[in-house]
Image (cartoon, rainbow, N blue to C red):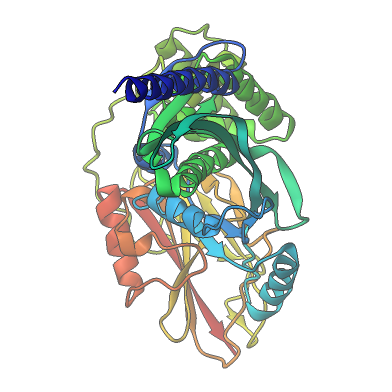
Length: 505
């Protein structure tokens, strides 16, 4: 008995030492995941709510027609056996259930396949509808047992033995993803996602703790011990999809993962967006679309410059900002974050719709849409290219469809090459213009129809689901009348329509 008691004490000391070791490793891993200072923590199981938030946010910010390829996402470590690309596909699908803002096309297993796809796309479609972007990346890091200790104790006798041990280990799993422009395969600055998760495994217990450290917050979750790496990878992929799409389309994605707007890293990112958009001529279009969405842009104003100034001043007043009429950074930040100035409530109008065709307005407030061919011709040779010119008496959003000889209908404007479909009052818009697709008369000499609709509100996300298919894709409808009825319903009758019959000779 005395000998057995001594042996028990030895084993207990070993276990106590092991516990102390676990505590030591916990402290080391904590240093890895928190860095130089502690951050708030949020317990999660996955980013499902963040994906849903992004779906709603893209509707609110009017995002549509983003077309992306995704290559095979390789495992550069050779240690993680998981379907990384499939995880990304699932995440993006969940993020676009309602908005349908992103069309994701899985393709290939290396960049060589991307090149071959681009060549094939250019030769197999009349519209040359090459996706705008390509997602590439890999599992770039798996540092197993960055911190590891094991303590054991055992005693053996002639006929029996007694022992105990405990081990702890901390590992780091990382991914790097980026978005490229397919036109030249250049990486889009700032549209990247580089994250790592710290996995803390203990020899005592059934679960593994994991932490993803992001700007201003750490996401903590538990995963099953037998597949902890794969579960942690799925969380990284879901977070990466939110970041990549949010940074690409310029929406405050961080709000969907509960990162405050005033976090220093987020403030720097917003400043980067502002100065980059201003330098590349994208700022005015972005601000105008957000002013319209919030009801501050005077659509009845025929002078586009004056309308912009009035809209900015109206928003600045509502936001408590100086009424300069200029697109300064505080104004951009308020519009981007959706803070400080609520959306202006606008009572729906009950005015009748403008009849189809190139009719004159019945009053100064009605919308009139004019559509004509750029050449002035009304008959074309089979296969001849043609362009159209659209204009409106009021500022409006323009949507154009092509109905071919077989009755197949596609939306060709707005599209992935020009998703800003705002048409200023009195301005002329030529389609396709400089966009990389063609419109041509039927090669068999059959008649086809171009139909365009104009609305004072961007009603895309209010259209019936069958009309919100992706650009250049056949709609699952039988006639242009279904398109017309969908626009009538979504706009409460406030639309104008104009048609061109493409005849051949």
